[in-house]
Length: 223
Image 1 (cartoon, rainbow, N blue to C red):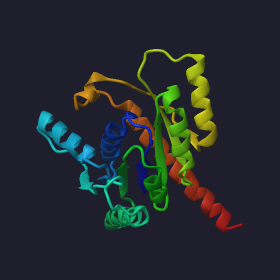
Image 2 (image 1 turned 180 degrees about the vertical axis):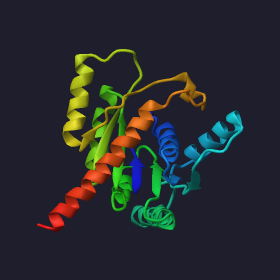
Image 3 (image 1 turned 90 degrees about the vertical axis):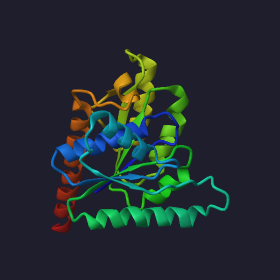
Image 4 (image 1 turned 30 degrees about the vertical axis):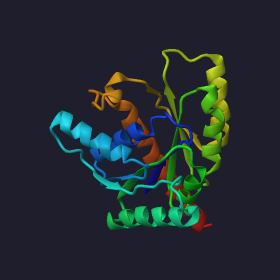
């Protein structure tokens, strides 16, 4: 399974989510690789900082595929195809039960459309803000693969306007996660909190969605 973590709006905690989701999948007994497709190796750097702080190795492999669509001479079609091929190769090397979590850049919708060719699931974080609404809707629209909206709040309370914006996003997506992430200095400092139940719950949801899709496909095959 290939899971893309994406939002073309910056500041949506894609890297933190990618790393912690990889960790949660690993702790649930899955073989996991984190594919870092960001410009500057954001996920790989975060993992190194976390490992140094805790004196341990994270229970998943990190593979770096630097992808800068704003580089002079970059060909979006060729670059997207090469990125997909690299990630697909990692996935195939892991066997049928392997999971690849992909951390992506902001501000480049074309790359997301390329990744849609290999995506099994997409996690789209959204922070309820009006400034992120249109970008989040465009992110969801970039994929035909099933999308799960992951609420991510920066403030203690959520008002009616926040809920209405979330509703607009969820209307266009496939699923709404029951998990809601909250801003934490622990994550900002590249630390690991004592409890990561939000990510454990998200893992459970994604696995259940995949299982349900497989069952539906088998039912259709026998009709």
